[in-house]
Image (cartoon, rainbow, N blue to C red; front, top):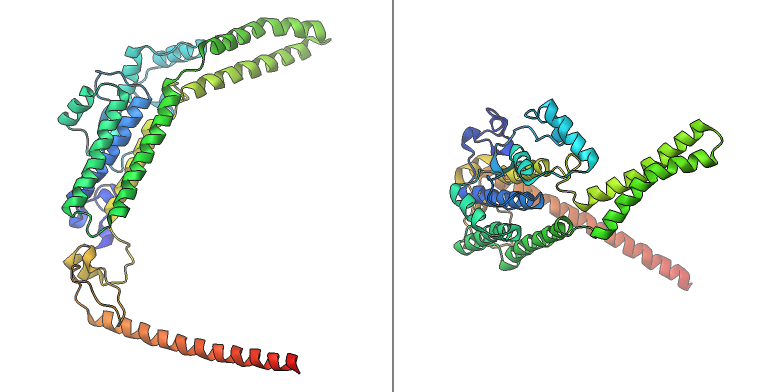
Length: 350
């Protein structure tokens, strides 16, 4: 139970079970469903093909972060990189088969993995929105069910409703991202922009040759002008679909791994510098041992109280004596201020 031994063994952070620190089943299932919901949302944003092999996989705490740059992936050959670079420069999009293979090489990792039943239900849901709604329903239904069963303790319903509200806010922002993903830029505007850039590639050199006296100056101005116009066009293409334009896509796999590690911090427990006795806390276990009362407070009958140790009673006695001394000092300073204000008032009156 020594905290210094928790990180020994595998580099799993708070997910390490060294020293018998296995989190309870409620936290494990909560972390799994939250990770699964986020992974399903990310997989629909990058437009995974329905009916294809599941792009979800097991996340192992402490594993290296997924590569942000897809060109650094180890399972891509040089010929494939050259081919993909040429297609990107020429503006060709990935075919459904190519995109499925690429997404299979970069799966979205879920804490606890994905069971066969979860995969079957997610594939049975028709459409990206239905899949995310199903995963969101699993998470929200689990929280409500565990609250009714008493797993969250004596937490009030308004606090639980805030959790459901935050989950609803997440679905709102997901639908905003989905609109960016699925609603294309107006087709006539996109074609006119592409045709304009193509025309400027041939017309700008003729204009610079006509109006510049130096051929080198004309070449530099031509390069800068065409590069700026073509760059603006490419930036607009990237912003039209930021989740699927390889290699400048948003690194969803890396963001998912970071989110998983943030979920693992739920296993950390309470603050390590708690004021109660650590040994008593580990023996009794649970948040019911958390007690901080004064002499005038009455302990609740529903919450189990930890046995008051000798060091704890001495600590409260010292704290009470210090509070009395501070109160005496406050009274003394208040009397001095009152006397000084009274004297200044008499001087003003005279």
